Amino acid sequence: MYQVDLNCDMGESYGIYTLGVDEAIFGSITSANIACGFHAGDPSVMRTTVRQAVAHGVKIGAHPGLPDLVGFGRRRMEVTPTEVYDMVTYQIGALQAFASQEGSSLHHVKPHGALYNMAAVSAPLSDAIAQAVYAVNPGLILYGLAGSELISAGQRAGLQVASEVFADRTYQQDGTLTPRSAAGALITDAQLAVKQVLQMVTQQRVISTEGTEIPIQADTICLHGDAAYAVQFARELRVQLEQQDIVVQAVSANL
Image 1 (tube, rainbow, N blue to C red):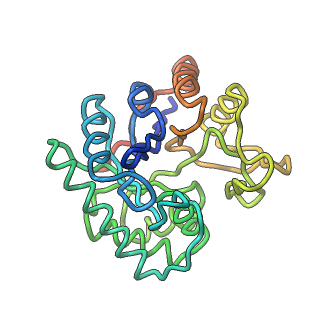
Image 2: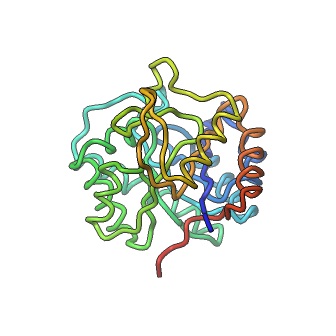
């Protein structure tokens, strides 16, 4: 029997600006990565999103990013491992406070955007993230790109890890995601995205943009809530997974 988690980046609105359709997506996912105010989100949005997650029985994860509201955390910054350790600690702590006040707790941590991609290929940055997570709460699950340095760093730190794959992104030959700036980075055809997901979950492989097979572990699937087709795709993907007798539920913590 196959089992997979559906996660989505949430709480990305800020002040008077609304981004994404969080409430409509919550019914299709099993875990939420909530922005912590650095790349998106603000205190009131964080609380609202935590409350929505609790109401829907969705697991809560911190989604720490680089301090770049203007660039939505998708621009690379020259940061040291010490700076990364501190900014990740700060953001986890902020969301943890809201979760505690709402009668819940954090389930996982998943870095965002450029920080995620930088950590995927940098052992020093990955170690900084993993060690920060462990120091806050060794029971948290670290979500990272399947086969990446972040997964290895989490294991070195003694954390439970969840290998993440992407429903709407294409893959390079080395297993990294195709940069958003490149042609063909995003999969906008829902059927093609579903086909890729089913292949990753049931066959543990994905076809790169070069046409070769790459082995891949799929513990959790990322959906993007800011895409125009997000709600329809989330619903369709969950239906298709369940029709294939794939259990859709949050990653279980190893107690």
